[in-house]
Image 1 (cartoon, helix red, strand yellow):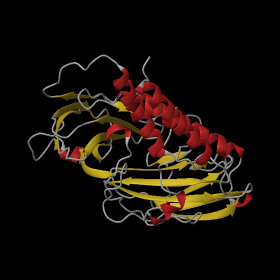
Image 2: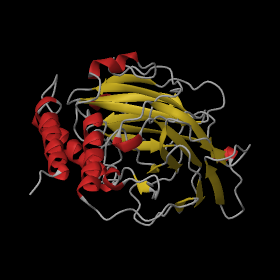
Image 3: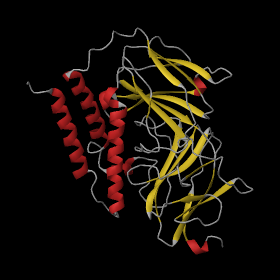
Image 4: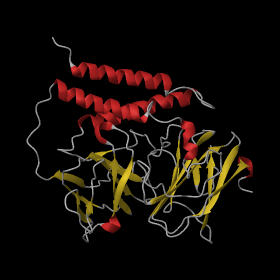
Amino acid sequence: MTELHSRAAFDELLETLRAAADTWVVPGPAMDDADVAEGFRNLTHILQSGLYSHQEFDPDRPVFHRIVSPTRSFTGDNSDAVYYETPVAPGRTYIVRGNLAGAVYTSFTMEAGAADGAYATNNSGVLNDDQIDIDPDGNYEIRLGGEPAERNWMDIGESGGRITTRHYFEWPHSASASQTLHVPISIEVLDRPAPPPRWNDERVAAALRRVNRHVYDKTVGQPPRDDVGSIPFVSTVPNQFPTPQTPGDMAFAAADAAYSMAPYLIGPDEALVITGRWPECRFANVCLWNRWSQMYDYVNRPVSLNRSNTTVESDGSFRMILAHTDPGLPNWIDTEGRALGTVFWRFFLPEGPVETPVAEVVKFVDLKA
């Protein structure tokens, strides 16, 4: 038997997983055994994403796949949103049909350079629901590629490789955790090509290499974690939030959002009190991530807040409490007992500057006072 390309590609994937285990999931500052274990959980979730979506990504026959879920968590997921992805290719034209399904914000982002499982270099355009004609029942139809149009159209561009869709819901409970929420969305390529060949050695090898590229680029291929300090909306100082800012054309970020992100650090007898006010905007929330940019357990715990489930004061301001146990006060955000984590804020299409939240460490016993 000749040497199979598919076997070689499979071995390459195993080598990447081993390298990620040995050099990416490694103990770092203030990490305990549970943190390392979560690193392996994150690695397998990334692998799951590669197998679920990227293994059989085909821009000639695209299908929208849900990116993250309660059991597939990576790259900063969100308890109040549903995301989909599908590959697209320059030179082709696609029709996308969908329904808002009650989302307060819907958009399509073109991820440039994201072909064949690669991590995107940047986003090359966004089409949000302000730029889409929507009927009274929430239905819409847009075109990707082809002749330019003022509305309901997005350019693919020479480096376009993948579409990310965002569907945000401000519900008192988690939309991402809902087992009944359905966001209708489909994609059709015009001038559909002939059926592909059967799954042969070359085709399987190419599919496995897409998975491998996806895993590699999200783990050992990432820049050192110290580099995050160069991102304007990211703070490396615990309990100190930077001014919310838009991310520009940063890959896998929403151009319509203002972000603010900082680590929190509290002791076993402490809590973090955060004060601020929600701005006028389309959507806003705050959530907690672990060191692997995975959301905390939003299915079973109150680990995020949005405007629909935040208790505000008479002047419109809020007082949120990050604590290891329930203080019996409004706006508790459960740390799951973690002394260290990440607080991430999103504000979509804000009207004017966004007030920067302010945090203060206090003793848990002094909260009510």
